[in-house]
Length: 204
Image (tube, rainbow, N blue to C red; front, side, top):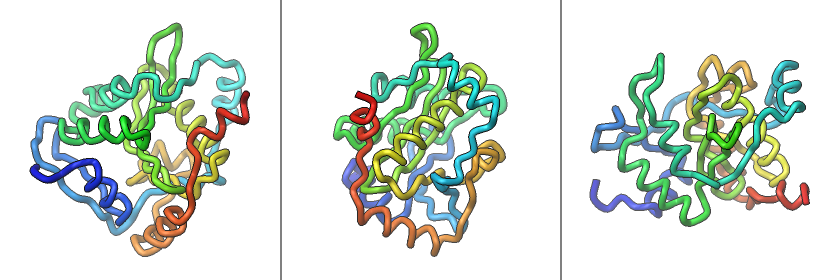
């Protein structure tokens, strides 16, 4: 897809549009602006009692941006129930470029020095566009999302975009809103500057 670069992708996200491919082997992108958009209001994020206990036990180590490439590849990997992925080589390359620009980030879940889950997305203004997550052990992706929410709250973010609401995300507090409501929330979020690394300052 000629002419598509990181700056074009940033402009698309700022306009409320995101790319997806039909499959991870597809060489084309489709631009998506759904009538109903999935968001996870930060104040609605639901931590179950069992997840809270797990997080308190510190079974996992959370790292930020230590292996972004491995996270995006983990998200694109085939797994039971989802043999294919919408993350094609173009999306992978563009997000690696955005990561090099310090705009795309990964929240990684490690256990015994092994990457067992995580998520990645794009931080733009006060909005975070969650792209995908994966889990190789139970609750790893939930732990990543819980950490992301805490990080976004600490950094003054206003919007966590999850694109589409799945049953899994709905159980954690995600809702879908109209396109018009989404664009209003996006405009408010882009008008502020979130700090993705503010939580690290508070923890030192």
